[in-house]
Image (tube, rainbow, N blue to C red; front, side, top):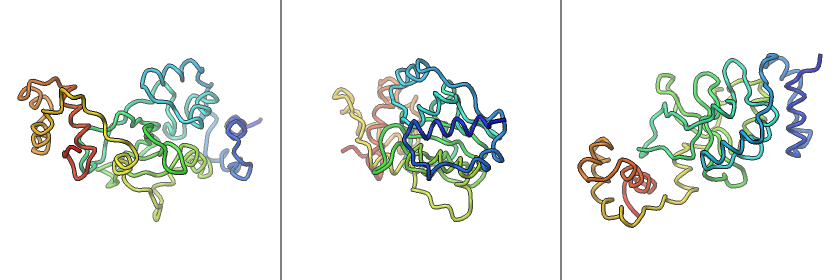
Length: 241
């Protein structure tokens, strides 16, 4: 009986024009994934609806896979179905980060850490970077594990779905927040909010809750978040350009 995952991976490679030399070993796929690892593909309307709703385009490799199989499952979801791809939840502390970028989405949750994607920029020579959330209980930190979805996906398949980035000696690409600040522009701050930046920054630095800041300044919580997103983008932190 033909292996459905192998068939879909071959179609994915063909759609993306990936050289056959990168084709994962079918025996590794068969050994690493069960018969329920793939699902019917998402509809183009569902994928377009997600992009319109969240305001970001999915990388072509991820979009193509979702159209072939709406997710990828092993012991847990390596790739969520399109309906479950949503804003990430941070489990590991990141220095100087107070509000996470709106472009960070949880792609999957295979086991120890969630796998996430930053849709705001393209890594030089790559695509949308893939990173893991980190886990304080496991003692791991957020870190970029691939410079594109395609790079990550091919490695996942080549390792039979195993979380290869947890292997001893694995070399990551650094903290996702550091790279995000480097490769994306500072969020704009509307002129009416600029006079409040000098007041909000020290309050955030002192650990004052956003709702309390809103109450003290007379701003809405959305306004406070916009100021923080603007200020935190410039290292060392909370200093306006």
